Length: 370
Image 1 (cartoon, rainbow, N blue to C red):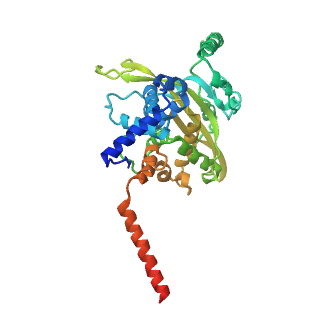
Image 2: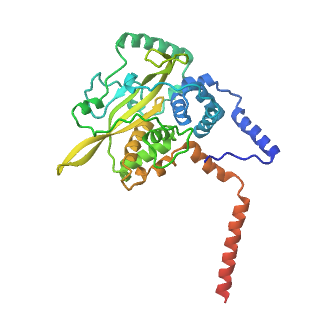
Image 3: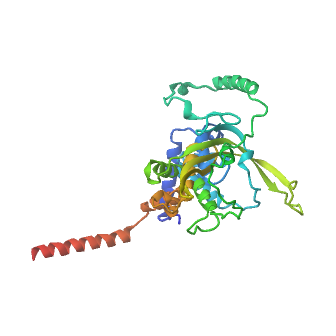
């Protein structure tokens, strides 16, 4: 259930909208959508994930319209998404086909293909860089020229697809066995959620969830409420190809596909140790938590994998193992709408509450006098 402001007092509302535009333009500066798209990569990736639509152009436009407010930008993007017709469904995408540009493992030092640090804030000093005040376009272009020349010489031609780290544990029989589930995924954008949910629904809601909320609940799970201490088996950032079935084909074969482009995603597989009883003896295996988000969204993808693992264990009595508690409270649009609706007029209900309080106090004062 989402809340949207209800119009009333047309003149006052029109003046409020004008004032909103004035606040955005009062310094006489205009930020171009292309500048946002080029310079605000982290915010764009977050908005695409929460808005559940892969379009850097639309995300940049939403950010400009919302003046950088993430929750408002997500609302705008979701609202626009709801107006779009669904013309086709892509073929299932295999994450193992990812063209990797960043790949790390906290579980193993030496992994097939090696650790690839890529672009990340993990290795920089968290100090303000005041040189950015005087950054010029000329300096940027010179640096880019030098870097791209060096980069093209250092990157090997076979850089791209790499084996999955988690397969190492599978081959040793150290992973918890799970049944393959190829049933049609439930689309949470078209059908109402019914509890208990299927894993396909949970993963959709988690990847669309508000980044801060998903991170906070993932942290709560690790901190003690969920009794979870995961290890990142593998974190990947890269591009996945997207294919559609050829619409005019009479039969669906492997050749009847159209490549329409690629999407950047962050994929995380976390490993959680579990103790199982087998023939009266304790046996330790690893269960998996899975997270995947649009763009480079690493913290959220890790937190998502933690919550995915928690929600698979609904028998544990803990808030982060309660799917209704988690899934109903991480949605940005739902949460923001419900909180924001408190700004709307509540005159009648509050007056009713006020009358009840006054009558209660009057009755108490009367009893005290008697």
